[in-house]
Structure formats: C-alpha cells, structure tokens
Image (cartoon, rainbow, N blue to C red; front, side, top):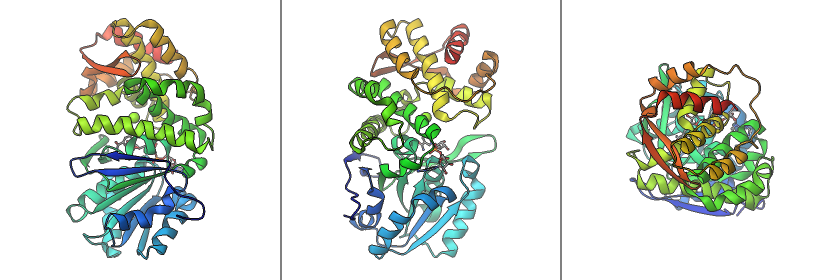
Length: 367
Ligand code: NAD
Ligand code: MG
C-alpha cells in the first residue's frame, strides 16, 4: 500500500478465453502497478505507453511503483487523439520497443484512454506474437468499456477499428483518481456507456443513476459512488462478454443506442460529437423504436428518456439530414440488427427495421 492509499474499492473478475483477469477499481490503484505485475509473475521490463497529456498528468504514480518494485520502465509517448490509432503509429511503436530492448517476456502497459488502450493492446498482441498486456485506463469510457472485453484495434483510412485482435489484458487497474482531470464532456461521454449498461442489463442500477447522475459527472464524486458505478458497468460488460466473447449474439446488446449513434458520428464527421453524445441520441431513437415495435411499455421508455434528458446537450452542430444518417446506416453491415429494450434492464435484437420507422427514430434522436 502507498501512503496515499491505492486499495481497490471494487475488484471484478473477468473470464476470457485466455484466462481470468482482475479489474481493480478505486482511488490510487495505479500506484499498485508494480506489485500487481509481480503478483502475475511479470518480472520483466515494462514498456509504458501513454499519450503526451495523460503522461504529464498521471504517469508519476505507476512509474514510481515500478521503480519501487525494481521493474525497469521504458516510457513511450504518443500524440493524444484518435489520429494516433493507426498502423503507422503501431509500426513506430514496434521500433521503440525493439530499440528499447523489449522482449517476449516483457510487458506492455497502456496508460490512457481508449485510444492508447486499443493501440497499445494491438501492439502487445502482435509484438513477438504477443507479449503480456496490462491496462491502466484513465477515461471513464475506457474504465467502463474499452479496457474490458479484450478487443484491441487500430483504424484504417477506410474505417474505424478495421484492423485488430482479441487480446484480453492480464489485469486492469482503473484508478478513479485519474478521472479528476478529465474534461467534463469526456466524463459525460463515459456516463452514456454507464447508463447504457444499466438499460440493457441492470434495472437495479437505474435508481442509483437517477439519484446520482450529476454527482457522477463532477470532477471528484464520492470515491465509493464512482467506484460502484464503474464496477457495476464493468460487471455487466464482463458478464455479456464472458457469454459471448466473439460477438456471436449476446454481445450485440452492448450496441444499444450505437447503431444510430455511430451513423450520427459518421454523418457529423468524427470528433464533432463525443461518442457518448452520439450514443445518448442513439438511445433516444432506440427507445422510440422499442415502443413503436411494442417491446417496451411507454412509461418505461419515458423513464429512460427522462434520465437521458439530464445529459448536457452537445455544443451546436449541423444536424445531418435523416437521409444522410440512413445512408450511413445502409453502409454499416451490422445495422441490420437493431437493439431494442424489452424492459428496463433487458435488451433484445430485432432485424429488418422499416426505413420509415428509422427515419422517425432519427427525428427523435434530435429532440
Ligand atoms: P481517448 O483515449 O482519445 O481520450 C480522450 C481524450 O482525453 C484524449 O485527448 C486524452 O489525452 C484525454 N485524457 C485521457 N485521460 C485523461 C485524464 N485522466 N485527464 C485528462 N485528459 C485525459 O478516448 P476515449 O474516449 O478514452 O476512447 C475512445 C477510443 O476507445 C476510440 O478509439 C474507440 O474506438 C475505443 N473503444 C474501444 C473499445 C474496445 O472494446 N476496445 C470500446 C469502446 C471504445
Ligand atoms: Mg460505445
């Protein structure tokens, strides 16, 4: 234990095809990196990959713990942002690893948001046909979503996440203290995935979110509340992913709000809306579809919509026409399967939505 603490408030075990791993959640847990690696028998060098901004803010604690554990560390920084999630950047990273003498028994640690996690994970999966990989997620989105489930990828000029692998981490340390520096828009973006998790799989979680949503969006929410919200989201994702690691069926329910959400991200131009802002709009549309198809009772949809109405509106943006959004949907092969709610806390997948219904749903997304 470090003097600042570092004991996990929540500890979630995730099963994967390459073995179980722990997700430790709480304030200061990134200062436990050294002991966590030793516990896993990882005694080699550590390549700590981060982006420039996160490195300056949050590398001290994990690097200090590596030093204490006498594990040599090679810090590597990349420019922040989605533009870094490329094969070219992965190639550059292979070069840094080779020059730094990182071998097959060494470890790649990702310190950052989903961009760093996806990229570093892809590099870890392929370098020497796979070296140990550990995640230290520092955005709410990466703590509740991208660090769990084992998907790693880079983008291709023709599409996001087109080149990747399933490569579960050996462990995840989700340090909730790091979230204090996260810009509010990024915090709300992660909260969209938290709310989604409750909608599709955990009705008991909803009253907590209904009571505490704004507190959770504060820079420093009560540590227990924040860790609890993250842990519940991680448990939901873990349960779904354990049942369906390679997205045969069940894993699709995690795409609730994402079909129209992705199409909106695409039609507005990536980066105009945060992922969460697009997903909130997509969930509004999907709730409308659920009621229209008769899978969800109107009062339940209204309750869910009321929660979504508490998310801040995105900064003004040019709303794409429903036609442009539908054109994007038609290009997306996965869009044929649409996730609806059959109750609060329960989702199902429907196929072949009528274009007329989709068009009305997109209007709802903007309301
Ligand atoms: P990100 O990694 O780009 O982080 C967002 C921004 O916040 C960056 O500018 C980053 O520098 C900054 N930042 C990160 N942590 C910070 C902190 N603690 N304080 C201050 N600033 C901080 O984006 P993200 O939203 O974390 O992740 C998005 C990526 O995740 C996308 O590429 C998406 O495809 C991927 N993703 C992957 C999965 C998966 O299953 N692998 C799931 C969902 C999303
Ligand atoms: Mg998402």
